[in-house]
Image (cartoon, rainbow, N blue to C red; front, side, top):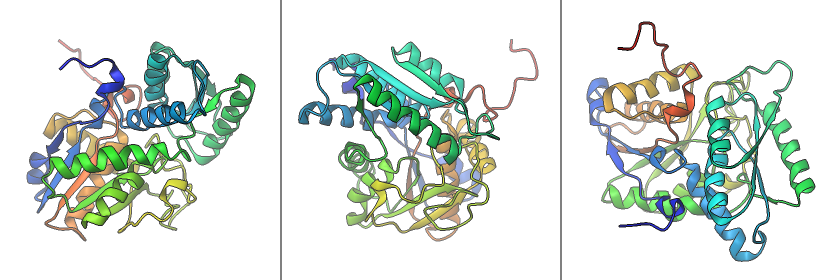
Length: 323
């Protein structure tokens, strides 16, 4: 099949049985991984980018040729750079300097203008906090007004969860033959979890939110350590629009170390080179398989590519010459 553009390649990613990991860890049940890091922008955010831009063009809130602005950790920005470039909209990505440099370079390569915002005092490169995100949000608002742009607003636009209610959720259900019993996802904007849960929960699937340890705002838990290395989420934001009235079975906390270790497990045991949030999702699935959901089939999303973290501590350094 020949597709008319990269936009048409967004969706229908494979679902993989992580049988080697479950065997290595001695787990009962199954863990299934949706490979959204194989989308054109190497992340699940391509789905929301497409849905938001297409909805805005359809309802007239985005005029032909009008610029688009969005705050991003890099993944939503990459998806928007692809969609906007193909559909003829200049795109301005606003990102914290705390995010990995690979993300900014990829967006520039795709034609985006990237505006980097300094971190809040005391900020740590590679660890983007809620305070850092607030500075990025303020700059995104300023640029939206100054450029006469459309604000994609992934934290509020209904196109974000809609992309997963009509895409990710049904795909997981169909690809698993209706066998999935549990779904867990690391929360950034909350769009993936909200949309997938709206589809999967009525079918008896228990859906869980995954947060970083020390930034457990949704669960009303520990908030003492809001800085963490899991880029793209865990900003200690309890009031996420997309998750209002979404039926959740519970909340899971994952440390940065556990996310890192489980991302490395994915690479070594399954040949799946994914990022920090994918590692967090696997760590959460392992928690569930060892506890409340023992023996059941758990589905997760591998949110983005490990290629976006080569400058971070996610991957061990090369200590000998590569031959």
